[in-house]
Length: 176
Image (cartoon, rainbow, N blue to C red; front, side, top):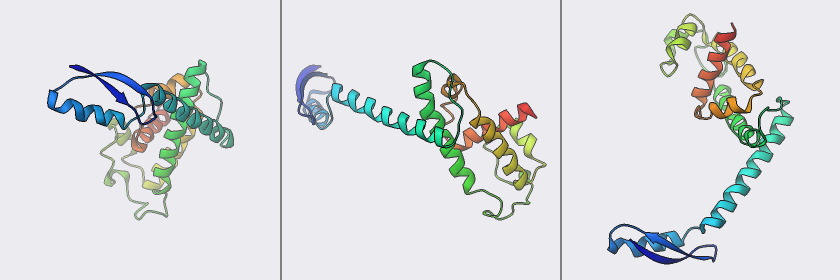
């Protein structure tokens, strides 16, 4: 390990300890110099998150979503999570509406729903794709009405549309 003075992309200079084989350290130092310094990077990420939060707040108001409840930090974080989740689900469902896809009357048991939890598959197996769409739409409405910031934070790992749809189905099944 050795200390190197790095001239960062932002123009700042700083010392960093670099580990690894001696022959690779100079190259590692050069690569780090192509990035922002730690302070500028942190500032850039903070600005990006603030812009995303403001956009999410604006979209939530436009879509008449309920206000989130929680601490200030939880609400700020959850707004972005909620908006990204709902957008991915809506894009996913837009391409799968009855009339857009073929075989909308085909039973769900014949559809490719292996990605869903067993509980959801069993609930859907005697439903048609059209009924599936109605159920998922109702589940998405339940998602949209979710006001707990901590709930959105707890479910942030459901980052794909399929995982959020599965969550929406689970909420629908619990209420019906």
